[in-house]
Length: 520
Image: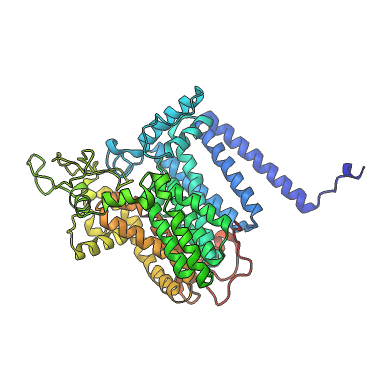
């Protein structure tokens, strides 16, 4: 009957059990008090706690044992949790009440919330069909199922985004380690990602960006891992991730697909013949993703025909987002491409470019503090114009492009970005010279920012869609840190105070021996 004998717990084990028990009791007390004040918030906290617990259990099973990482993820959860509470209860919408500052008529998160609530009601009635939902993607459906399991309130969906933001930061941590950074560098870049203003703001709303960003980061992580060591399992996971990214925002998915194909041929560790053979197979199979994930045909041929023609490009650059140069009452002709399906008088949603140009002259939108049209910048169709667009998309808006007080919030993002640009450039040089494994991050950023520079001339949309590209460049910035830099020494002191750890923060001549890795 030896199985009935229990091994006595050691002192450390007893202390751990006691600590966990105290944590559970405190969590229950917090939930009880919160439920008395706001039942929706209490349910949301339980949702975050449940998802976080599952995440930590998975991390512990994948040989990631860093206590600093676990503590850091809790900090990230608290940061984004506080942001959600502030935005929700204070009704903080400095750019208007729309998802990108375009007013109520273009509030994506309001539309998503209504659709999700309708789906939750239908699920409770036993109807699980998604066919009657009027949405271009399945993000409201995901939120609807969460509503059905919890409460049909927007706050629940926003708190789900808190966990999603933590996953994004976790993926940033893993990417930095994968390209040769130290754990402290990974935690610092993760912290910058967590407080990155656009990520903090848009990631606290009920927007599909909360899924697009982690999908992109997961795709880049898997791309890097496949280049270093091909695995059929990792490729299948990447295929699913690419399909998800393409479904939710097709041109971001295209950028990821292109990044993988280019990176495979240029950087794969596989011998030349196998690399070419595998690459051809990948090209054949990856072409089906836009067809079944976005309905755009093999390799997105439908979207290529629609958008990559001079008339459409001219429409998006000169008409869709650009402020009118004539008074609204003037009957000015509007240049329109021939192949249009629906009238669009106002800028499309932040998932642009997805709307089709109008087939007839439409009333011109008037710039105002709530429509967001005053966030647009006029640019010419010329080689110099495209270069300007790329600069604006990558670095803007510049201080002189801010037209009113509410837009000055963007300075909280752009000014630190100019400071970090020094480390990004150093990281890019390092990637080109020695750390070529980080080049997929640069390739993806260039493709996505280049796409935005061609089609989008509105800073409200740009700041939202460029988030994955900026985070990718932040990961490259980790390679730009070095031990002799005064700034890095200062950051080391901050790190030591936050995580109570010793050792050099910045990149030394040797790598840390106990780097955490994700074994997919």
